[in-house]
Image 1 (cartoon, helix red, strand yellow):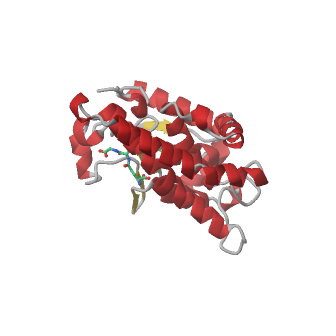
Image 2 (cartoon, rainbow, N blue to C red):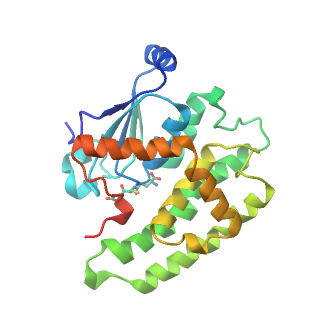
Length: 247
Ligand SMILES: N[C@@H](CCC(=O)N[C@@H](CS)C(=O)NCC(=O)O)C(=O)O
């Protein structure tokens, strides 16, 4: 039994809820406040799909050791849906979009935008989020004698250089691909959220800054923030966003 097994149940509109409960098992999402697990949480809110949120203190590997029995990596997100278990947030965005194609958050293989869509989903973590985790680690999470301001500065610059791809794409429209909001925007949007926590927003290009404002004004984004805050309070887990934690 993991620490937050009781979970928080987040409701969808009643008619949709009824239909989904009959046809599909409940989605369980293991989450730390504003960690990468925010990607599937935001997706679930975009889809208005019922889910159970299991909050964990950050990092679970240290503060919720029984979670290692569920995910040996000790990382969030962990998404459990029937027999399906997933630990990659970008893949979860794709999975959730594909579960509800009628919501229009995915891109079909027959669509010319399909390759670009997959590219953004993968880029969101491998290219954009990864350098930010080095900034986080070497400015906040390591003990004082192991902090490395030069590493943090270098990887902050690396991130901003990679962000040029986002700035260029937004020269063609409001969203990254397919001419509409998709799961790729959620996945990349999380990298911007993390960069914002790290104080890098003033160095975003103008189109990226406007895009970040559009993303954070989305009602589903706001609902996801509120849901994680309430669930943290209900489950006795610190409500401070994990990127803002200081040892
Ligand atoms: N590539 C994975 C990375 C998952 C990951 O590293 N999550 C971080 C939180 S953002 C974590 O759980 N860190 C805790 C640890 O490494 O112990 C994804 O996109 O979901």
